[in-house]
Amino acid sequence: MEGVSPTPRTDVFAYLNYRDFLRDIYAEKKSKGKTFSYRYLASKTGLKSASFFTGVLQGKRNLSPHLVLKFAAAFKLNKQETAFFELLVSYNQAKTHEEKKHFFDRIICLKRPAAKIVDADKYGFYEKWYYSAIREIAGVRPFRDDYVKLARSLTPAITAAEAKQAVELLEGLGFIIRDAAGYYQRKEATISTGQAWKSLAIAHFQLESFELGKQAVDRFPRAERDMSTMTLSCSQATFEAIRERIGCMRQELAEMAKHDDAADRVLQCNFQVFPLCKPLPVETEQGK
Image 1 (tube, rainbow, N blue to C red):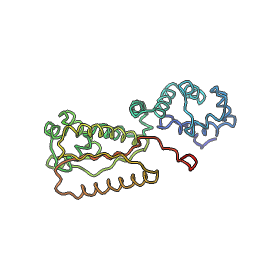
Image 2 (image 1 turned 30 degrees about the horizontal axis):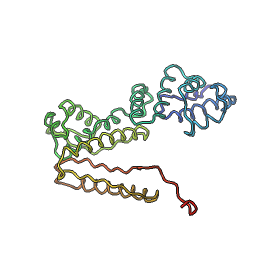
Image 3 (image 1 turned 180 degrees about the vertical axis):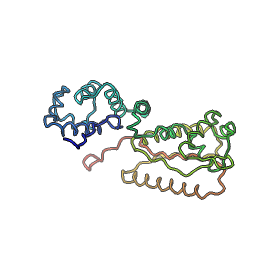
Image 4 (image 1 turned 90 degrees about the vertical axis):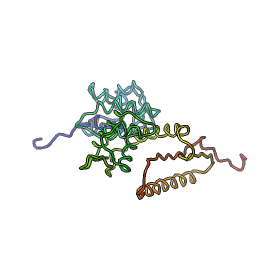
């Protein structure tokens, strides 16, 4: 019909969650033809049950490599789209952080510029522990282009080349800025992007920070560090209360640092609370 724009085709390159993509492309196909149904999908992919697709959309079922290709064919994805769809499935169904990061890095490389969801540079900010450290140093003691000195001021020390690359990244993100005298100073700025990549990036940063914590036991005398551990048992309600208290403490520490006019060092504060066993069944009077 003249004057009516065609409905844009669901673009797999615009997604980070393959289940969201399947939900949207199914809705698109369904709107164009009533014959396209869960039963039709089951017949095209060789599934015995039409409810399998519902389980996939709800996150209750996963796609095997064989089914990935079957679904790609059913939705008429071309070669490049199928390759990207395979990556999305591998990324979403990965079991470990390292696996997720591996597939995410490949996704970043294959994403079309026109369908850009994440900013690779901002993702990169969490790649190395010393990026945030250098940003904080700029807030405590502005520096010029002496990358050797900057690199050696970190613990553990990095190379001058790494320091220079970090400064370029931070400046590009707007996290630091060079003043009229040529000194780099910290600029207040925040990262605001999609939660899907952000959680992965932060997890990577946390792993690097935890490794630094392990090394700090041997690197610093007790007077220069504070580490303690404790093991306790509690209910789900108490666990949630503990998480809330830790959150309040983080905010309190951030405020203390914000108003500290005599800052002369950069600290890494790690808080860890994790289970040492699965939730134990509640014993009944009869079972005691």
